[in-house]
Amino acid sequence: DAGVIQSPRHEVTEMGQEVTLRCKPISGHDYLFWYRQTMMRGLELLIYFNNNVPIDDSGMPEDRFSAKMPNASFSTLKIQPSEPRDSAVYFCASSLGNRDHYGYTFGSGTRLTVV
Amino acid sequence: AQKVTQAQTEISVVEKEDVTLDCVYETRDTTYYLFWYKQPPSGELVFLIRRNSFDEQNEISGRYSWNFQKSTSSFNFTITASQVVDSAVYFCALLTRDYGGSQGNLIFGKGTKLSVKP
Image (cartoon, rainbow over all chains, first blue to last red; front, side, top):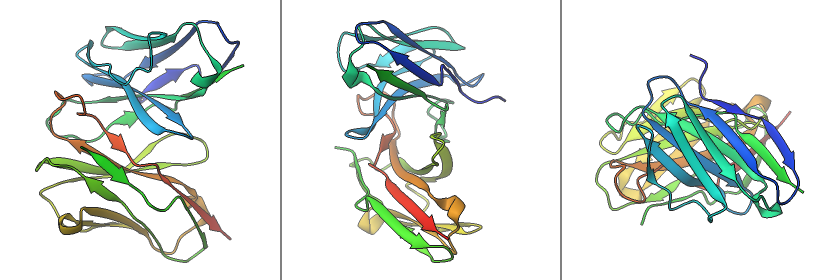
């Protein structure tokens, strides 16, 4: 298995532009999570999906952020318009159910820089 | 409230020294899971270990060992005979059983940066 795949690995964009981050979870995993990592706040959950349905988006910082999961093998996190304070590493993770809690498998992350 | 505290922000040791990374957690749930992840300089998050709240047995994996004590709500991680390749940020994390609640997610501590010098 190729693991959780995120793209792009690095993104540099200008303030005000739209940014789309992409994630392909591990095949068969039914939970998908988006995390953001910053020096100030550490790793924080933005949103998670179960069977493609958003379950908890209380961590999404504001309306400029949106996430979708149109099918079991793809999710996007969109920021529109982007701001310098959105600069962070964004991780996608997937897991299998809530029965065994084997932990999450994380992607390599997308390092976003908004200038 | 669920919370994970890693009081040590940074630790620096010399190669071959033993080092212990502390983790203290808070939860009211009786069923929960604890994890350690490693984040090397390359940035990815690597799963190291998972422990459930009913299993207090210590675990050893090569140079790594974990000490889970429910009485003190601690889940400490020890690296024996540290190596330069162990240099990374280590995160302790807590997961409660149900995903249904708004806090039903993997909650991370702030991490401990370990530097192992040759």
